[in-house]
Image 1 (tube, rainbow, N blue to C red):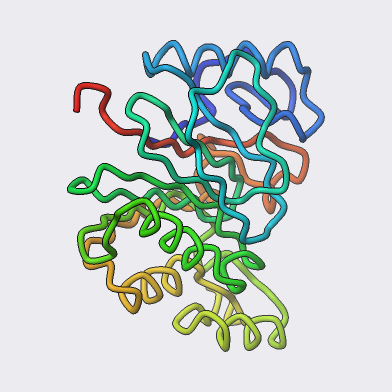
Image 2: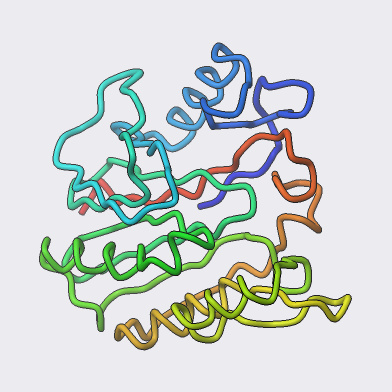
Length: 232
């Protein structure tokens, strides 16, 4: 699932359902928003990450306690624990949800330009395989993100990302160099053996119900969340 700005307690540029503790929002409001998410999911806990645009993957092997700090320096997480949700926070970067229903393994990844090019998805799949998953049995969802028509970058940056993540180079609707990270990530997942890949077509810049750093600069973060059914 992916949250939007709807609901919640945040105000001002973070209105209303900001779930990030690192953007300058009122900590009391963020804590209330996180409690609301956990209550709505009805699960044993939600694991959040302190994302740094890297490739570190956390293996979650215990139920998080109330108010547990975000996992430091981490951009992906995997688990086999039923009823424990994994969340990534974004406001233009690509949130990626992964699952191997056969093996009972789920994962999430925060794939911004830097992390995507560095191989955060490869690292996440490798961690899932370490828990018994098989790439061929995995399913993936690429969540809302800035689209290629809106993501303008210098030509040198576009070419560097394309070299590391083939399929991501594009042109914006203005005809300038751009990046479509979801296209590149979809191609990468296929090359890694993941056959079932879905794409949420929403663009964070174009959709006012979603947070976008490129559009607003000072803003909140939405959450993409996955979990194993506790009834398994």
